[in-house]
Length: 102
Image 1 (cartoon, rainbow, N blue to C red):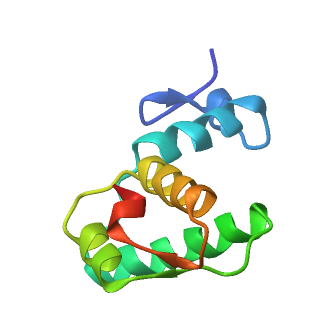
Image 2 (tube, one colour):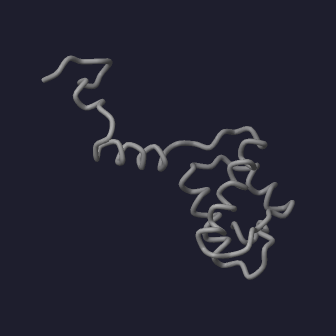
């Protein structure tokens, strides 16, 4: 076994392999979104824009009640991304409300 660095062998810490992709996915699944409301809204707007573009829709915006809904809860990044993507997919217009996210 290779030299140890912390609790992992150095060999397993190399970049560029399949393990890095798995680690990135695991981080996305469990990584919490920052608790600062401004950070949550900035991340939500980014995810909203990305989802709308990926789905071929016009840019969507968050309503005030949606912004309150997002800031009153602790989110995991994956859960937030899925909620926003689903809201964009199911929404006919460009305004995303709390009901769309709920």
